[in-house]
Image 1 (cartoon, rainbow, N blue to C red):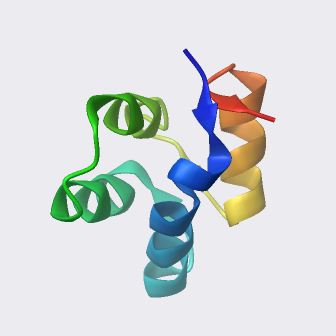
Image 2 (cartoon, rainbow, N blue to C red):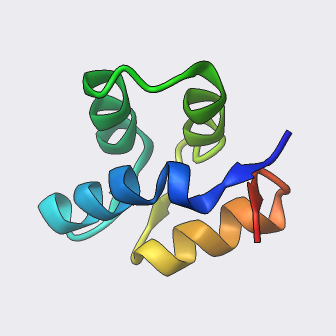
Amino acid sequence: MAIAWSEIESFVTRAYEAQGRVERADVIDLAYDANANDDIIDVIDAIGSRVFPTVQATRDFLASQGHIAA
């Protein structure tokens, strides 16, 4: 099931602003801190071991895999 980008955008953006890249561990920590629901956690898990250079690259990947609504 795809979720809206707006549901994870702040986690991805905050991780990028803190690290200058997007990695699952950084995003997931922020989501856990916010007590995010399981659907959000599942989408973040889809990042896997990939490292994205930008927020947009992360969004593009998740959309291409059907995890977020484009």
